Amino acid sequence: MNYKIVSDSSSNLWFVENADYTCVPLTIRTDEKEYVDNSELNVAGMVDELKTYKGKSGTACPSVGDWLTAFDGADRVFAVAITSGLSGSYNAACEAAKIYKDENPDKDVLVIDSLSAGPELALIIEKLQELIQQELSFETICTKITKYQRRIHLLFSLESVNNLARNGRVSPVVAKMVGLLGIRIVGKASDEGTLETLSKSRGEKNAIAKVWEYMKEMGFSGAKVRIAHCFNKEAAEALKEMILSAFPKSNIHICACTGLCSFYAEKGGLMIGFEHGTND
Ligand code: X90
Image 1 (cartoon, rainbow, N blue to C red):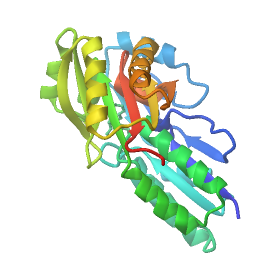
Image 2 (image 1 turned 180 degrees about the vertical axis):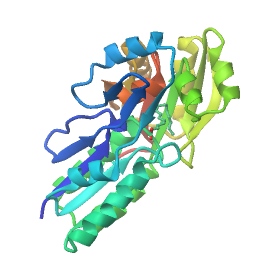
Image 3 (image 1 turned 180 degrees about the horizontal axis):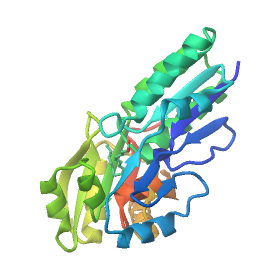
Image 4 (image 1 turned 45 degrees about the horizontal axis):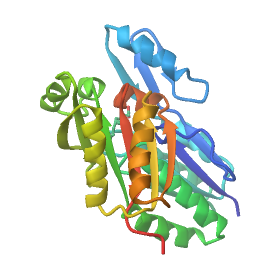
């Protein structure tokens, strides 16, 4: 029985060590160009080009066919999608799962609505890999991963929400607020998988301090943290240090946003996925 993990590129992960894993790209589009969010994308180049681009830009989720192709050949598939509250990716994956199961009655697919983006998907993927390695049954993994989702959260700090606002993913009121110089929005993925603003902070230092405060409030006590940044490694490192000084044993990884998350989190943005509670 072979197991496969598939996610869309909002996970910021092209490869997962020791796992059969495929990443299905979302695309970023302008009137002139299409950027496919795969490992060949020059993210820095895209961000720079978009900075001076005056026309409309947007994104598109993977098609049913893209998901279906990624499932191909696997007996048991775990498909992890960006929140259904902001994207059609989850619906496309569900549709693909239906077709895959109709065509292959002996195969099975669990489609997971992450209700989140970026590093929270990475946490789900890592947990799936762990459970697969324990050689648990498909049903057991399904139960355990659903339970795990209640233990993980996403916070973010954004310097600009222009692209989110232009594409109708946050209200214009929120967009205006961040537009003010030096103001950052700190927020979280809501239970419905949408952006929820928690506070405004002046300057990056204050924003990071706020994130850390919310992490503790939300029950962080030294477990896993995954930070994705859009050209802001310094801030990610600063947050990491802050966490480590309180919980030296925390398991913290930092990665760069790929195309989709860079488009929406924008330069300077941080996305923080973390577990509450402890492992023991
Ligand atoms: O289907 C599509 O075209 C993709 C649309 C994606 C829209 C939002 C992506 C957000 C990425 C922003 C910060 C954290 C968001 C919290 C999610 C609940 C990054």
